[in-house]
Each structure stands twice: as structure tokens, then as C-alpha cells.
Length: 220
Image 1: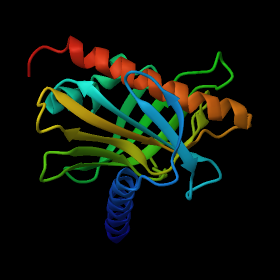
Image 2: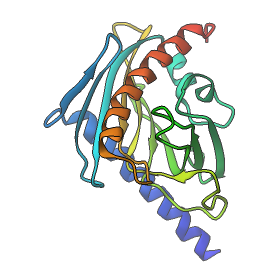
Image 3: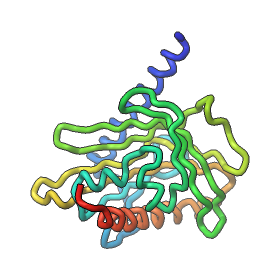
Image 4: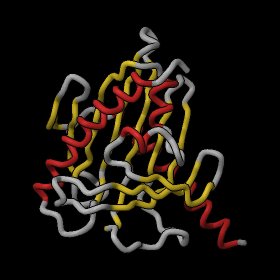
């Protein structure tokens, strides 16, 4: 019982540290270099301080209320995200730690014309709501969990602080500002050029598909 309590506290600590980290990324506008733009999103990057790779930031405004946007993004089993996000093939709840913190497994399909094989990720996720209505979904540095050992057919990837932040626009209640942050070690022996080209394109597609998903929702 003591071991379980300590593990739970460790998960909570990791999750809270990541939530603060993402808010720091959001508020710090220095050192970001724009690498891709579209009508929906601006994608920027800078070297990660977490691992020998980059952290990518997406910033865009989605046509839809915060409630609708969050309905498409919230990290729950059988949620909408697996239906519209081409990079999420399966999302599984491994353990509910607290009301707002869970351990989850995300499965991604092959990508980059098969160069990137299917991956799976095991993360502790914290959902946090702020006084101004902002909602964030924060995935902490990868964790190990006895309910999900490495499985045949998947390369185990490792997420470092990443997630989504949905910010209401007070003057335009039918629009939502969405920040996304990705810094992922995909694992395996992938050429750096493949990784560097994958994330900006993938994030642009993410915003485009999110916008379509929100538009297709009935009034909430």
C-alpha cells in the first residue's frame, strides 16, 4: 500500500510539473523559429531542454466555442479524437489516478509513407481548468506502468512535456485559441530529417482536421 501511495504521488508531481512547463512555453515568446504556416496555424520550433531534439509549438484560432473544441480534444477512451486525428489510432485508459490525472496509452499508425512504424506511448495526463476558462490537457514525460509493457508490433516512443491548451476568446465566443506543444522521442533509428519534417506537417494537418471535426459537431 505504501508503494502505491508513493507511485501515485510521483505521477501527480510529474503531471503538475508538466502543466507549469506548458504554461511557460505558452508565455515565453522568445527563441521560437517559424517553420510552417497555413491559414489555420503557425508552427514554430526551438531546441528542447528535455531531450536531444526539438519542441514544436502550434498556435491557431479554431472556429468553434471552447466547449466544442474541448469535446474534440479531451483525452478519454472512446472520445472523438480517435475519429478525426490521423495520428491517434487508439487511446486506452490504464489507470485513473485522481479525478483529473490518468495513465493512458496512445497508439499511433505508421507515417511518412511507412518510414515511421506504428508507435505506442504511455503517459500520465493531467486535465486542468483555469479561472479564465482556459482548459489544458497535459501529457507528462513518459512513465512506465505494469499494465502496459512493451508490445510486439510497436516501437515504444517517449513523450516529453507536451499537450494542448484551449483559450477562450472573450470578444468572440464562437472562436477558440488553441496552443499545441509536441516534443517526442519517436524511438527507433529514424533519420533526423524525417523527424524534423514530420512534426510541422503533422501539426498543420492536426489543426485542419480539428477545425473540420468542430464544424461537424451539433450544438453543445
